[in-house]
Image 1 (cartoon, one colour):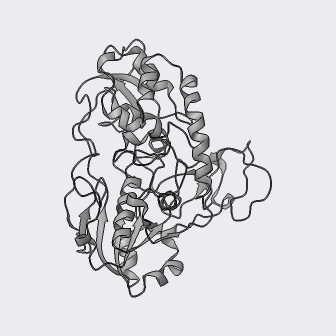
Image 2 (cartoon, rainbow, N blue to C red):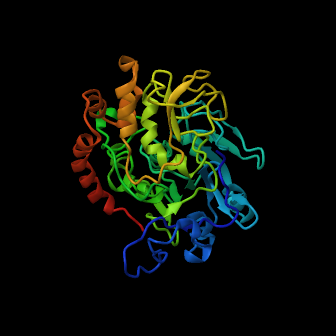
Image 3 (spheres, one colour):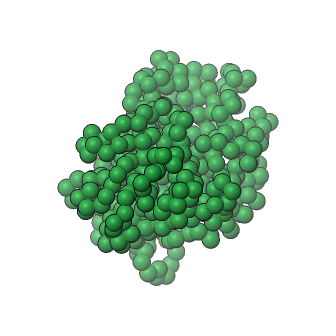
Length: 410
């Protein structure tokens, strides 16, 4: 399924009725009986990204040597095309010295987990430093001569999506080297809910660094404030932080990304299903890698075709050079027409475990890192229902919601 690119500014489309009453600065409510397909551009206010607010942030950059943490999502939409932030900053006379790239690289084409080498941006000649693999944190040498680090990445709101881990290390390095961090805020396409188990400290990894639930419901700017405010950086240090906020953002609205945030999240449906289906990455079930419906289908040769009549064969493709079960027929489910989720769906994971012919090999060690706890695997193996599992999450989610409230900007 191909991604639909927007040529104009980002727009929000409401998918449900919203609370009554006026709320200045936010789009007007859309009646429940109005189909989202019938809503026109005039029905919502245009979103203005942090990266678009040049009049606000340029004074902070004047006379400074700048580094950018960015990738293919670091774009500014215009009527004609999407313009990369690098090109915009250079055209404005900003002294941009180097670029730092997260997982998947500066152009966003590398596989998940694939090593990305340092290099140069072919368009501008700027040096590009990889912040993945063995160099997740910028070194003092790499930061030498810089006054400001701009962070502009499109997050998707899941704890195991590694852009927020990169944010942590960038802020930590900046704090240690007295460098200003400016986060250009972008919407969270899964910002309309929080859900999942809260990570336990003993299971900290690059796919889960902080004691938060799987779905945190915060923008990248809000999350940066939380990292500072909760003292999560080494020794409790704080980075000099400035968040360039968006205008007209509403976390309850449906948001369509103009470019893929990473190779295996090709469209809005995949982004919405990702927090639920990514758990399959820690099992012997394929989550659509090696197909055109990444994170919109799941399947395995070990699931019975009588129970799971939908089938597909994963093949090598962009972002999945060697997908799980490559060349083998996988039986499972096509979820590409599923309604928008506002909670993690555990039924698919529970159902797959219940019917696999390889229960002993179903889970692997990566599952605990994704879940952030050993409890979820134990509950599924014990035959617990989704409702029983969710009951365990409740206290952690309520406590997180209280802390989260201190950092919300919108």
